[in-house]
Length: 218
Image (cartoon, rainbow, N blue to C red; front, top):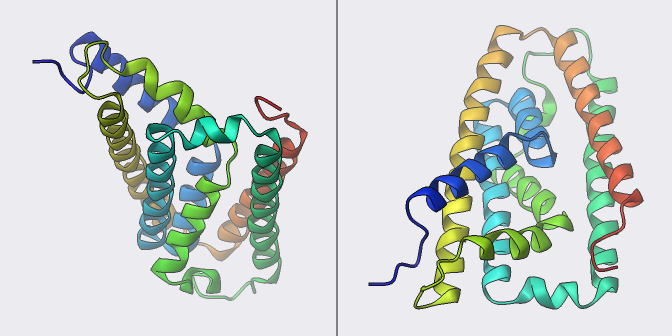
């Protein structure tokens, strides 16, 4: 019976590719680590769940052709690019402001960590949805692993997207656990301020880099 998912070596290659992509430092990794260091494991896990929800949306777009539609209209990609850069810059500036305002005798968990779990989830979701590379990435990546004899290409794409999202979530949760242990081992407020400032600079830098890039198909 034809399978919807790759098997054997092809499945191993797919899993390995996802791991390499997740382990490559980028917006998702930086956001997960920064939110964990700022607000603890709960905040980091909520952000990771938001990022995963964004991956699910992109996978649905790839399965039902939304990413292909976006690729036909470069102006739409430019809008997403500018919106994504603005959001990253907003996150980065916010982290810099909080790091600057933090008092030396502030409690171990900064005020920024009081953001609700839903708020952290929303930050993760928006950071992923507003990354203009993601829809085209899913459109280019997932179809490569659709079995040649699949009875349903859409079904295969949906299952591959679910696999990608679940494996990515597990990776991010492991990252949250490691970052939380690091945060507990180095709970000095000065170190937290420097970590927040460094994260803010990284996000501003990512926003500037995103603005300099020319979206595919533009």
